[in-house]
Image (tube, rainbow, N blue to C red; front, side, top):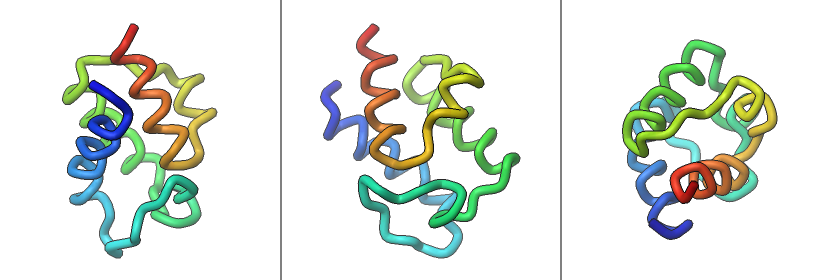
Length: 80
C-alpha cells in the first residue's frame, strides 16, 4: 500500500473522531487542531493498528504530532 492509499484509509478512520469536522492537511496536529484527548488518541491508534495489522509503540506515538507524521509512520510500519 502506498502513502496515498494509507492516507486515504486513515482519513476514513478519523471521521468518527473528528467531531468538529476539521479539514485535515499534512500539518494538522492531533492535540491542537483536532483537540484529541488521551482517550481519543488511544481509540484512534487502536483503530489504525487493527486496520493495518501493525503495532504503534508508545514511543512512536509520543513522536507523532501531525497528520503527515502519522501517515509516514503507518506507511513505514506496514511496509516492514
